[in-house]
Length: 290
Ligand SMILES: C[S@@+](CC[C@H](N)C(=O)[O-])C[C@H]1O[C@@H](n2cnc3c(N)ncnc32)[C@H](O)[C@@H]1O
Image 1 (cartoon, rainbow, N blue to C red):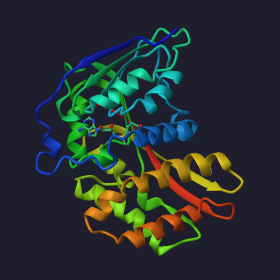
Image 2 (image 1 turned 135 degrees about the vertical axis):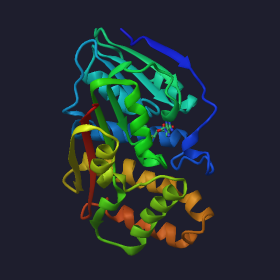
Image 3 (image 1 turned 45 degrees about the vertical axis):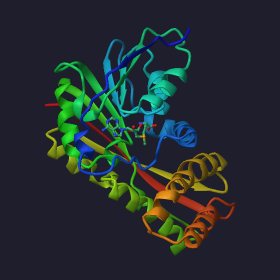
């Protein structure tokens, strides 16, 4: 049986978070980025989702669902919950809708809504849980987004936030040029208003936004030649693919020369060879709405 994919297109006219800067989303919405998001979610599913389950009938809001890469893993673990998945990008929502797995007989439901996190078109206290993954890093005002989000959650709701932190990256063999290519992505994202090193800030961000019982758990990724799934799924298809995606913007902004950028990528790929190693830390926060 297929999931019933309800669809609501609610276009917001104001994107207040980005009103004062060019609306550039660092990763873009290409087919290759959609593939990368899928590879990332599949590779990290157990590490990031093993402790997230929503009870039957729970009303769950996923904000910034993108092409539904995390949604698929949420549904698999909570097949009887009722999901509402929001993103501001219509093409991503269409892909998410088209890519839903079979439901396996669960009583749950999924609805997709096009909206901005700062203008959520839901009544107060509409949801029991919220899930936000790799979204706050792209916002100039992540704290305000967390405050806005709480309006649509009932008191006592759970909030789960997962973010990366590119500053947590280290690898062997080390290379200044490889680190420079990563810094180019961090800088490009910063100029668009985001923070690619936001993982380490989740605890104070959630506390400042008024959330209760905030717990942050670091999720460490380690890939070496004996862990082919991690090397391929994470080092190559998630991380290096993400850094490569910032090539045009890094060159356009004059952050690096074409030659240095290319040499940096070659050095980064060296860490994915049999005698290389690669490390990265994600941060998963859970909290309650007051
Ligand atoms: C890196 S993707 C992550 C997608 C998904 N959560 C995942 O992990 O595969 C970030 C997503 O956040 C969405 N996004 C960014 N700013 C947003 C905003 N202000 N309101 C709603 N969605 C937003 C983007 O359109 C994009 O789909």
